[in-house]
Length: 231
Image (cartoon, rainbow, N blue to C red):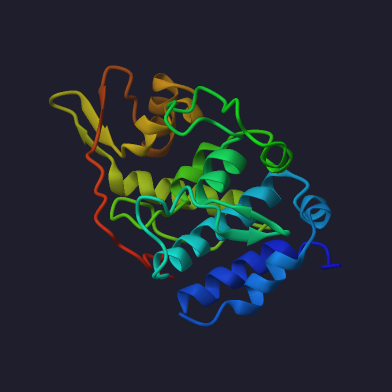
């Protein structure tokens, strides 16, 4: 039995070794060996689930991307991540667990009717839009990779959200337009809808945007691996 709260630390250790290009066999073996019961016991609230699965997603995307077997077209859908004696895909983690089984291309509005009972059991209770600024899928327009802890998760997610939106958002006061990341368009429902997106931006940028037209930047899918936040 792995001691309480060690799973989030294990996910961080895995990601840290990936960053340093060190061997991750030990961490991967520990993740495979735990039981589903142990996984659920330790990840009993949304904060623990988010910290663990964000680290796991970011670590395994790098691992899979550096594997000769991984292909860009199937890297998100192949169930090749072994945790708790089960296999998961990157999509299982992002859209199933962290987004509470939302359909991938429904803009965050529709649940997946075909989701497995396992994903339902592991999923967060409430979707936190800030995860979109924490997950990195190896593209140039993706948010950079950070390390997430249970103790400071809220502060960490606020930091990456504010940093990313500051860097990706521009305001044209003359033409009354605001341009920001297309992530907010693709997952509009996760933010509570179009007008809630404006509220999020208003709070971060400290500006009234009620009369501004919301626009979204083109997303660059150019590969950019190992994009970590610098200290």
